[in-house]
Image (cartoon, rainbow over all chains, first blue to last red; front, side):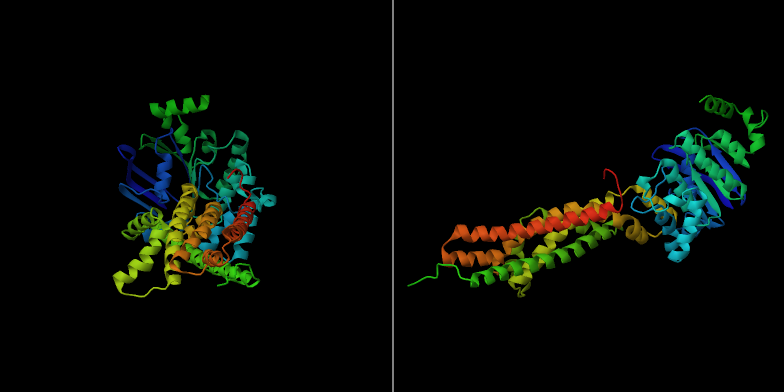
Length: 244
Length: 224
């Protein structure tokens, strides 16, 4: 379980997270919605330990991310896919995927490589496994990014606006992979602007606004007129996003 | 009294010896400088308190004062201060290594800093230690980045070795001096000596360019 308790985070005088409480259990797909600047990405960066908390506590399977020793354990349990892919440009797709399994999980090179090639094959990149990131399209790079995360066999997959930098066609190819993962019971924290897609794969939807958690509801209730839509801020947000 | 003002075949051996001394000192001080300068950069990467500030200050001193003055300080100053004996070769090795290290430190620091934060963050998130990130993510890219400036630096450092002739190391320049005094044909002597430095420098530059090509070709980076 990922447990977020009363988390606060500020950058200078700007409060980005203002007392967030959230729980993500195994097998759930939790989508985090909210306008830009609402704190969605910062929340993910707090969960994977990239930002220091100013208050509150985050644990991943009971490992506290604020303790350096426990953070290492927490990081073995979750894996992040980034908005801008963050691939290592000097490594091929396969090398990108195998680096952490070899260095952190101490897998043998052969073992890690065959697993990586199988993963890349499963996302339609079998033939591009030995290409460098610069030789791949955005959608292909993000698929490598997903494989890199999956290769760690994480209990939790953290997805930080992973389609924001992609055109609609590439977005579709990445989302279809997520849909498949959701079906196989992969636990996901899905920060996104893809509302319709979030609706199809999520078990729960969380809405953030100005660093505060406005609602945390099962997907059906979130979109029901008497549920999430009864909140003016959410109704406004959804109507705007749908017009676009 | 007669002077041997004409060149003999033995002079080629002298020149070869001088070139050998210059090259040996260049290679030794380059290796030491590479090692020390890289160590300094790694200490800075780990943000070791006090030591980092000291290194930065010391490197600034080395970069901003003439090598010849540093050489005199080590060769004449250090023995006077610490009551120790320093041979010309030792003084040359210490001074040139320190000077090279200071410039390699600067190149290494900017090479490390040229690597995008996002890659380092993602490696950290996947559980790689700071050292593993340095070793597998930063170093390979930083080397490719640094090889150009490094080649330029080494070409320059080769020329700087000529200064050590002043304290009596029998390098290529010192041999030039000796031949010049004997033959009284300065134009020929210094043209030959200069030509030897030139050819050596060109070889270093050529080697650096080849290495850079190889390091970058396999990464297939575009426009970097």
